Length: 241
Image (tube, rainbow, N blue to C red; front, side, top):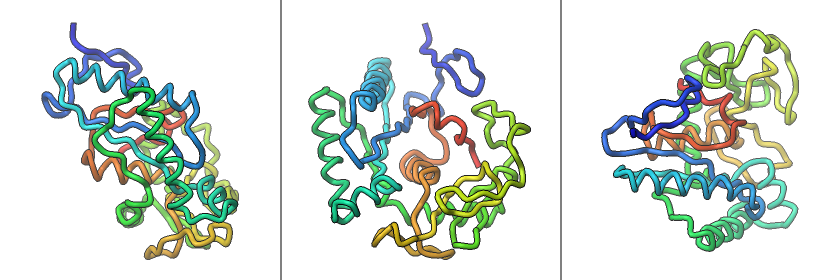
């Protein structure tokens, strides 16, 4: 019997055929390293390990990427509260994560990119979206993805966009955006960020989490890959630009 997976797009079981015969490229969401991963987190990582092992046992060569989210609101706030540089703060939880994976006999994957190591790639991707008119700058220097300019937004989640409120102007996380459903690709630097920030053509700041995985997956897996594993809360934002 052919290997089958549930296709989130079609919402049905389908025979699995990778983009490249005999090779599977897989992206799996890793930990946000502001604290130790808990048993609920590791439930996902154990599942992904079982999937990886099954694919290999089925004769596929597997290239797996698991990201380490080491810059976001939680890592920044916690590192400042502890008086530690961001890299020093997150390292303790990255080390703890790998120690726990050994305890659980989870195989090491091929790539563990940390978000802070790929900010130039994120800036380049944001610039591409700006050039295409799919993203826009706010008055404070933040950059937002405009879902109104991208008709395919929400297709994977079968999102009914007629239920979204167009034209609303709200402040979320104290960043301005044109529409209530738009999301931040780049957050302008504020005093709450301390010394965490990168220079970009549109101003100093840091990436939003939506762009991090997009940049890192393309870096290691190319513009398309076969399997994405993550929480169901990620389905709404997974669309190809």
